[in-house]
Length: 81
Length: 151
Image 1 (tube, rainbow over the protein chains, first blue to last red):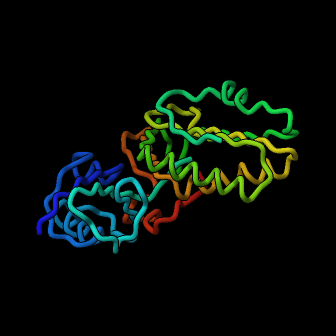
Image 2: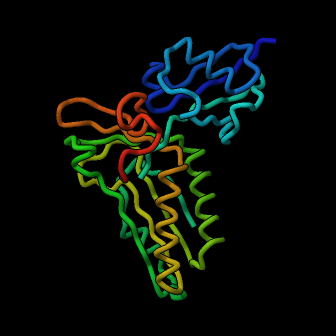
């Protein structure tokens, strides 16, 4: 079944995508599969091992299942301080 | 204990007042300021972006860890978002404790863990007109995912 996922991009990913949020329709089973799908589509430069993913505002593993209606946020390497 | 992001100028005087406590014999503060040079390039300004709900959640987790690890009285951390000029205050941390060594160590822990874990991103604008998202290079010396030098 196709799922509808809300995706948020930050920092360099937001700039490479050209927007901060979008609704994505996907067959991806996991967060990692969804990132690879979007990376191919939009040419993101960062490989997944440099990123973290949050599902519904909590850090999760790339192997986590994505469910219809989830919000996924792809987080580039942080640089606060 | 408080960890929050602010899109306005940080006011250390008010934060210090919030840490007043007669149980504390030590108060250690740290200010992270915007440097005029980075990796040999002249910086003109910078912008911080954050994933606010997760940043504040992760920040509060760091403060909870600090309370477990060190005998402190209180701890506050405020980190800026938005655009900052050179010399601007990017992050302010204050820790009170009965004795100084816990306050020093806890303050160090908070800034080190915040830099490593809290979803905040820094974009530097250089005097030559170029820009760069720090730690996000996929080519060149910064490409390994490690910051080339301490910030």
